[in-house]
Image (cartoon, rainbow, N blue to C red; front, side, top):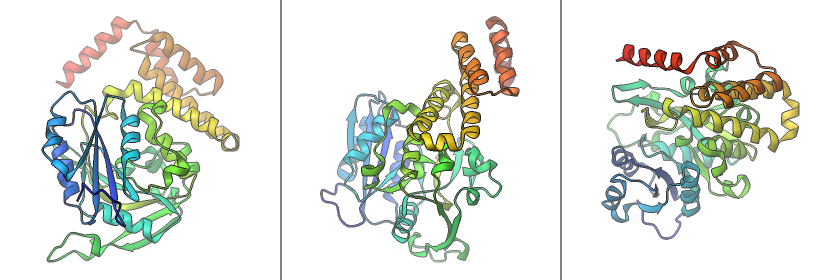
Length: 357
């Protein structure tokens, strides 16, 4: 599947950033070896792992392409991987997720059928150590979808059924309900500017998109995907496959987990501000909504910061209220935390931990 020196027609390069991924990486790679799409280049960017990730990757030989670099974070690893990709199409994936066998075939079919679509994503299943958490998890994971009256259909105004029979793995009997899937597509730039709903590990795009949208920016931190996806949406249509093509692992170590909340909130605010600065016309056209967004992101960052740096939390909360006019239950909750002595908050957290145990 991999080790291809040239770029044959239809080659898909799958880019996987990996940092200390020794536990999950073999299952991730096995799912790519099982893809029904015939030509796949697998690129793993080992982003300065300190566990046995490098040793595990070495066992695969030329079945995969490994790039080692000093730890630079998600954006740096994605940037390195897409720059090295040989394929005409590039898929993003994380080192702890699992692809359904038909993932790349279905998404490539979408890009082939609708040339105006620059990026294809999909629904996904979520699982943890206890088992499956949700079979169609996008609505639950992304508030933009969950709040929309008709889910993704409210965000992407065109929908069409797509026959994917020949994308599926060989089987004696394939249920008729699985042979077709709904594809939603449309201009999502305005919606994405207010919040992401494209799940990064499910993305497939043409490599030419990098020429117009640019690549991943380390300055965007852990929200580099939202920053890039918004730039991509400004170039052309987005497609969403209403079918779980990925199994998404939920864990305490992933970047979206509670332990990384402080950085995630800070980076979210930074990228939201960048989006507004990048398109002043859109910002002014949606001024009320953007002010509400930025007010919330400031308050949310203050809530995450209050246990670490109360002065920074105060500044963020004042900015939320004074500059963006945001006053709600979150504002009052953060204010209460700011006014509560640190020793009292620490004791409360300790009781919560003991109660949870």
